[in-house]
Length: 247
Length: 317
Ligand SMILES: Cc1cc2nc3c(=O)[nH]c(=O)nc-3n(C[C@H](O)[C@H](O)[C@H](O)COP(=O)(O)OP(=O)(O)OC[C@H]3O[C@@H](n4cnc5c(N)ncnc54)[C@H](O)[C@@H]3O)c2cc1C
Image (cartoon, rainbow over all chains, first blue to last red):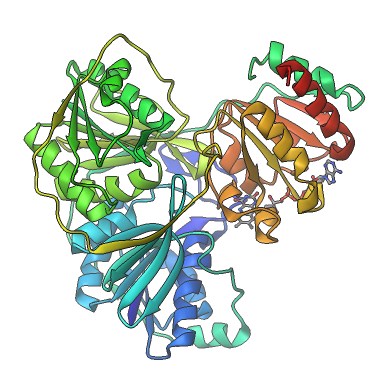
């Protein structure tokens, strides 16, 4: 089985969120970059687990980004990918990125494409669905479990009122979230090995974005907390009822 | 025309359906047009009632019963094209997340996910969306003729009007699904976390699952959903689907009550869109107090039973 895992680079979860150039750009100075947690903890680690069960499985990674994405893709390789493709382009919008990934995917003939549930910066939750539509493949979103027997995948996905088990034949696109796998830490052998794993840089296809990010805003600051003494918790209930009117 | 996809949960209309219906009707007003709905599968609720949220026509495709994003996308694309929709609206809920991006590709229509306000049509078509897990907003311009928006749950006030919608069957072929649904496990009787008006949440400060009565008793009295911090789900004190935060579910209830949760930046990211935040924590330095509207610095094991009693009295329960 050939798996393609989509990897995105995102600011560290503790990064200060601020904007530059008249609020049109994320102020990335001094920001630490990480692999988007959903891509790493769930999509990539589940792919690695599948390879551990079946050694004929191969894992390719794909990312869209400039050379600054290389450390992120090397870290993903250290965790367990076999090779990686970086599409050398700045990100424009989800459609642009999905089109780039679909072009690479078409060429590689993958059986299974994993994405994370969403990126923690843009919160789009769109790449998986878009890639699936571009490739005319079935898409199972927000999966919490993935198993494979032969060419039939059994996937548990989250639904509004609980969970649903789906069965589908490969090829397939799946977006991954909590439950799929557990976070792993790369070991020394992985880190050393990652240096020599193939990282191919390809140029993007020409395609227009459908949307443009005009500007960013920060939410208004809170007025401050009103503290109630621990000796009179009933006063809190009164305030919530009469002042905040929330119940 | 503005077309809104109405998601059925077990054949029923949920709060998110009324939110997107209202959002579609208000968007249509801005554009000087009508709002129609499309409903796939069989509804046990009366669909004419969508008129109360400003929808004039409801198009139904009864044959599309089992959810499959690929199949549903094609049906909705056919409807959008034949009915000349210029804007298609979804809830940014689980099914919306599966269909809306596919439809964007199929119609080559620019898509903004996770909208938190009506589009600004004064100069182009700009949609405010949630980014950085609730820590900021982005204003995104859609450049294509047809536009797709998914609305975050609990982000738009339902507008009730006088009216009744006309329900019409929409004739279109429904493809055979390549996905077979082999089992469904329903969590019944619980309030959906993303739709809940009130959420009561517990953290590691509650010491163990045996103490969760402090959370669930209060939740029951308030008709609230329950949630938890990430470590609580990781150590299996509570199920994964309750985990809120940057890497869990993002919520925006009217009231969020956090008990024994420190308020780490990753936790705040998923809950800071809550309108009122209440924090109960024994550490006055807990970062959560900075994001809170009301708080008690105290031991949850002493404070919570008294709060539960006071709420019980208030509710006359
Ligand atoms: C990449 C990344 C992503 C993450 N994503 C998330 C996420 O999505 N959601 C999330 O929640 N976390 C997330 N985390 C983890 C986050 O950083 C915190 O570790 C976590 O939120 C802490 O959970 P907690 O507040 O329950 O526990 P703790 O940090 O252990 O805090 C427990 C709190 O309880 C208080 N307490 C103790 N005893 C009592 C008592 N008797 N009465 C009252 N208060 C008491 C303490 O004062 C303390 O403030 C993420 C971390 C990383 C690195």
